[in-house]
Length: 255
Image (cartoon, one colour):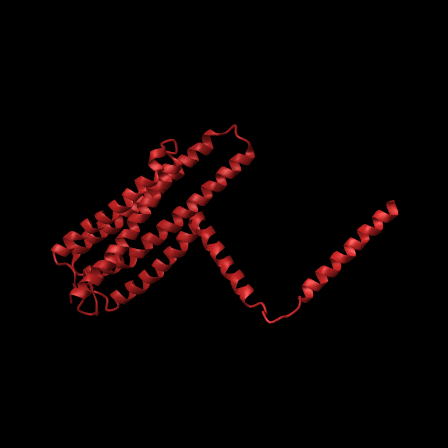
């Protein structure tokens, strides 16, 4: 049972850490775009401290559920979580582990969008090409906001919906935990893929790794038992000889 409680707690710890890590990412982009003149706001040491502080905050937020013994063995399942029938515990859980970080993420990216729109409107004397580049950059930022916030909001939407249904019907839907489990798995996989998509550095590294692996597989499939040059190599040598012969002939004719 102790292992069961620990696994339920770790599930919430890592999910909460994921939300707050996106808060740090949003704060970094806000500082890099809006407060770009303040170099100390994009310093590496600052974000190392924020990451450490993030984990301390997560453990601090989950300390009351541990002390209040909200984690129990679910009566209809074989694992431990905070039951959705405990309304007070779930309100605390959703507020601090879900609503607050999503609001912080939305404020960060909303601020960035407003700032970039204002910059585009005030730079009327800039050439049309520069304005087009700014509009394209705005579009990329908006896509990132919509994609990321939509998936993060969607991750908890079934939980809230099924909780509301349980309160109104005075009983949880029998497949509540199974539906939420499948939905959470799909959303977490989508978040991983979307993170690669919206982060140019990760996307570039992923593509470089994929291309490197393909090249290694292609090289590994090349026959290694050939004793002589390949057909392509022989054709290349013959073309080189013909080219050299033509060069020599042209020099002799000129002389």
